[in-house]
Length: 172
Image (cartoon, rainbow, N blue to C red):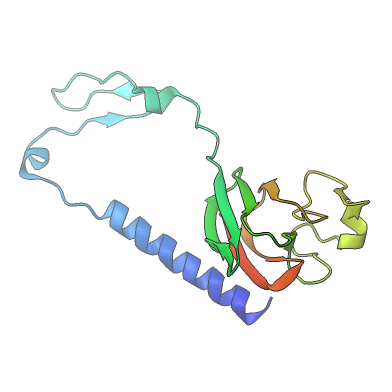
């Protein structure tokens, strides 16, 4: 791992910790302090104190929705946003808004081995990915979509202009 990747991972962890701290450190109002405690579980609701058991909410019983997609635009100055954080199962779509070429490839340049461990020569056959687990556009195009199925920080670049790149951080 290079220093840039390590720094990005550390920054992502710090951001996640800060968001978690802010989300779970909310105060309790005086009204909430004076109410009897009630606990709810998605599979079992039970009353505590003199309060009746609440009905399970739709959010507690409904299956989790599929991760929403994310779009990254490629412009004259590179990708925007270049660095993103998404949960596993998210499909990211890169869209070229320039007249130049866009050829999204996972780092390390030029072999593109960082996501699935195989090189461009192994996972791209005649400009087509050999499996759905290949994070590599395999040939230049106006649009490229990939669904991230494993967690980690994955640097990427425009293979047609390797100075333009970014990082997709995938969380569980």
